[in-house]
Amino acid sequence: MSNSNNDYEDRPPFDRELPFWEHVRELGVRLRRALLVFAIVFVALWLPMPSVHGHNIAQVAIGFFTMEYNPIIAFVFRHYVFNQVISSAKSITCSSNYIVGNSTQPIGIISTTVLGPFVFSVELSMVIALLVTIPVLVYEVYQYVKPALYPHELRAVRTYVWIAMVLFYLGAFIGYYFVFPAFLRISLFWSCLFGFVHLLTTSGFLDTLIATLFFAGFLFETPVAMALLTRVGFITPDALSRNRPYIYFGVLVAISIINPDPTLVSTLLWFIMFIALFETGYLWSKNIYKQRQVQI
Image (cartoon, rainbow, N blue to C red):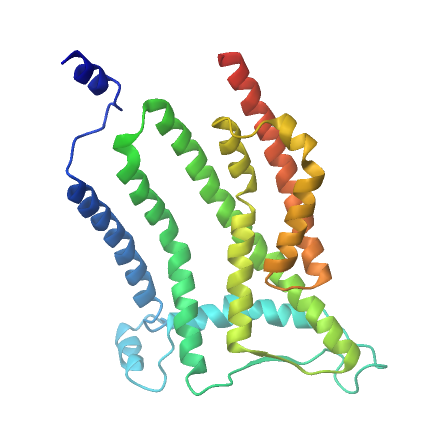
């Protein structure tokens, strides 16, 4: 009896005894909530875009059933995604030695299949809906595991989860505003040298954009991963310092393999970003290690 009481006292304060299938059911309920948010955002992106000159709801509703239907996702693409292509194209000026006529290298996005534009809009809507749903998904998973955590574990999870989420969106933001346009400018520059008309397929354009956003987002998780591994005692700052050359070499090889735009310039750009993130994580790791040594 005493052993069972000790086991109960050693459990987390919010832990509760539930059958296995109750845990599965609760997890399913929480995942369905995140899926519902995903579906709401996805459907909302296909609603008609309200007129910027007027707010006549009747006209918007009528436009949904006519050829004037202009979904929000199309507006978002034209004004917030394709603008990145246009701005990149305008920043590249071709010399008259390489191209005759317009000094700015032509660029465009083409569809090579019958349903290409529709598939493109569906995939873009799914990506935007996923980016919006991530905080809800993280919150629901956090609420699911919360009863099984001790107070100090809860504090750590709250700290690292929200920092990791902020870093992910920061990485996606940098990938969208800086890295992806840089890829386009590099490609446009070489097209300009050879006098090519730069035409992007819908699938190629979207695949590169998605890969860039999520690759940058996960790359920015480097400091959090290093801090967590240090906190649990898996790595130490001294080990990171000694193995820094090997880590850099391994990451450089990995980036060159999974890089969304496998060129030398883009690989170096990602690698420079990793170095900055690694050194930030190293300083954070040293601070955590000192705190652990003081507690011991």
